[in-house]
Amino acid sequence: MRAAVFYGGHDIRVEERELPEPGPGEVLVRVRAAGICGSDLHHYRSESPWARRGPEESGHELAGEVAALGPEVEALRVGQRVGVEPEHLIGCGRCERCLAGDTHLCASRGRRGGAVHHSHGFSEFDACVAENVHPLPDAVTLDAASILDCYACGVHAVHLVPPTPASTVVVIGTGAIGMTLAQVARSAGAGRIVIVGTRQDPVELAVEAGIADAGVAAERGDPVEAVREATGGGGADIVFETVGGKGRTLTEAIEMSRRGGIVCVLGIFTGSPELPAQAAFSRELVLRWSNSYSRWNGVSEYQIALDLLAAGRLRAEPLITHHFPLEQVVDAFAAAADKRSSSAIKVLVHP
Image (cartoon, rainbow, N blue to C red; front, side, top):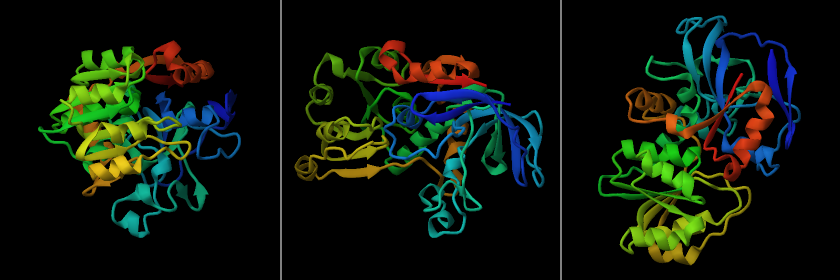
């Protein structure tokens, strides 16, 4: 089979690899769509807090069709359209956190049989744990299903910090995580949503698509002052930070919050971000991190996201801006990494 192999940084090569064979409790998935995640771009820019282990296949946002069943798999069938929950979130199943349903907080997360295990969405086929493979209803396209990982991150964040009809919610970031989170917050009943981005174009898209009620672009002025003006000077009830990296978005999130407000951080920081402790203290803010997702009251948050998508309460289509075949995966990463030039939000690769 053909697969993208990541050697580090911008060195990505499409090579022939051995077709994986599904083992007990696994299925072979023919990958039809795979999204480029912000964490993939951290590796691409050589800024990731997690070191790569050498030449490897990658891609954890994926959807496709069941191509073969391994032993002991009875709940799925060949030819079934499926979304795949990323396998770097697998827990050991035995520790305190796993038994509580918080597999994403397992100290051995992403390991099976002691070996590191992860998804291979930028490949023609991937052998996947059957429990992580979710059948798709007819209403959900493969393209939309490939970004369910993004929606599930939003579902988890909204479970941790639930908005109400009285809440003014600010989402910092107009990438896929910010846009999908804003949609999930809307579906959860948030009263008013303001989205904050660097550039005007994605901010306008978010407002025009009904993802946000108002938008703020940093290239047009100070985003903190703009949010304060949009909230009558009081600040936001909840601020979700979805950018991370090396910027000062955590500081901005704190400065945008009302007294007694909540800041929830989804963004992956590649260094130690500035933290204005005095501002947070004087406002008596709650500062909460949201790391991926797992289960909520025993129910898969990935499945919750899928159910919302199937019910038409989330719309993936406005967010999927670019499509590339596997042989052009280098171009796909270049487009995803330079959004100012490409105007990309979510870039898909189609093996």
